Structure formats: structure tokens, C-alpha cells
Image (cartoon, rainbow, N blue to C red; front, side, top):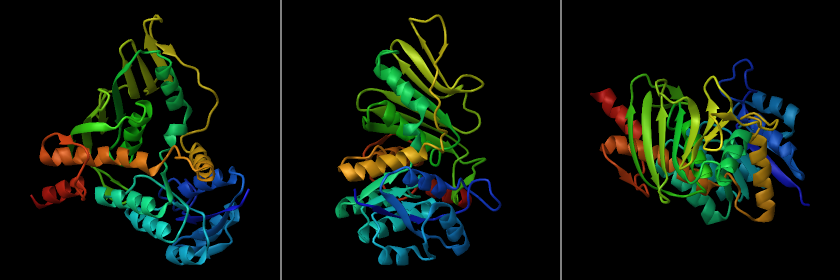
Length: 347
């Protein structure tokens, strides 16, 4: 087995350490490479040399760069992880693909605009680079078990998905992706959405809505409704509604997974195996992308799948801008949310 040479862009500080502003995602990526036979982290790029050298002492990567482009030009890298803020994802992904990197694993959300997201995928397809994004919840036990129950017929044919989270972009990208995960990767046909800009917050430098909702129709007739903000009215983070029952994931003040159907006498809590946390399963996604690269198959977290989830975020914002339904595929290039915010600021 040939060794795969790995580079990390954006080392950062470990989560919850002094000065840390995020989740230290590069450290979770590194764990996945450590668990993947035949992988070695050989080079690191970060605007803070101090952060990069501290990262190297913990995870490996003796060659350190403060310019990621210099690292890409100098090192013969097979895999690159991009663990920076979304505004940098497109330029770094395209640069890595242009440099001949075979596999690029990028943090989510994909990019601040729909055009950038599409260009990232197109650049990697053009150069034959495998592209993945860290929608790691596909590997977490509650979501996998919910899909197993659905596929086993526990609630009959899927009819509707209901989901809640804090925003449509940073967290919402996970839930739009998990809709495809539950619904056998079926593409969406249209989106109808609305956002309210009041009480919005800024995440990784991107201003987001304070409250929103997105209704989606998929090609197989399944509908989904994602609501965001603090006042949502949904008890569970995910609800799968079938013709013969309901599955709920992450119930507020309740079990992580529960089932209601005709065979039971009320809600039944579903036991889950001892598993990794939402951050720990990042390593599972890394291990899968390495295995996919070696086998020549599509990885679970492929850029194609991430682009479908991202399209739903921007289509929701576009629906709010148009004040009408948006039929897919989405043909815009910008961020409708940013345009709405600019319009509101100038009002």
C-alpha cells in the first residue's frame, strides 16, 4: 500500500483553548488520517506559524508554511484538508485541484455564494480530483439508525421530513444534506422559503438570518420542512413521518431516538450502540474518503452530494428574495441573503 501524503490548510487552535473561535476542526481531521492506514500528515499551512507548529507537535507535519500556495507548489500532496472559514474555501479548493492534489476534504458550509460552490465542484471534476465536504452527521449513530428503521419499514413509506436548527446556512447545510441521506439521495424539484433578518447572527464571518423556513419537494413526492431560529415549535431536531408511523431524532428533553408506529403502545425509545460524538465522527468521514480514493468509488461525503444540500440553502434565500417558489436547478450566482441584507441596510 503506497503512502498517501497529506497536507492541512488552516490548523487553528484546539477547541475550547485560549483564543479559539471555532471547533478546532483540523484536529478532528487529523484524527481521521491517523486512523487511516498508509496516510501521513507531512505539511501544514496556517497564517500563524505558531499554531501550525503546535499542531505539528501533536499530529505530525514537520514542514510548515504560512502561505498555502507555497505548500501546494512545493509538496507532492495526495490529500489536502481545508479547515478555514467559508470565504476561503473556493480559492483554496480550486488552487489545490490545479496543483494536482488527488483528494480535497473541505469544511462546510461550502462557500458564501452559489456560484463559488458550483465552481469548486466543477474545478475538481475537470481535473479529476476527489472532493468531499464535512457533513459528518451521515456517520453518527442516531441518523444511521433512523435510516435503518425507515428502510426496514418501521413507519411505512416516507412522506415528510421535519427539521429544526438555528440557521439555514451553517447548521442548515447539515440538515439539507441529511434530508438526502434519509431520502435515498433523491434530488429536490423545488423550494419555497422565507427569512426574517431580525436578530440575525454572524457565523465564521458570514451574517445569517434570525429566523427562516424552507419547504422542499423531492422528485419522489416526499416533502421536507426546515425551520430555523429560536422560536420553531418542533420538539425534535429531525422528524421522519411515514404512512404508518414517526421516527424522531434528538428529542428535546427526551431520548436521542424514538419511534411511534401501529405495533407499539406509544413512543418507544430506541437503544443506540455506544458511538462517537458529532465531532468524533469527523474521523469516520476522513477514513471513508481515504478508502474511496484508494478504491476509485464515490465517497459518502462527495462534492456532488454537498452541492445538492448547498443548493437548497441558496434556493431558500432566493425564494425569499423573489417572494415565490424556486424551481431547481438554481441558476443564480450570488448570495440572495447577502443581497437582502444589503437592501435592508439601505432601506
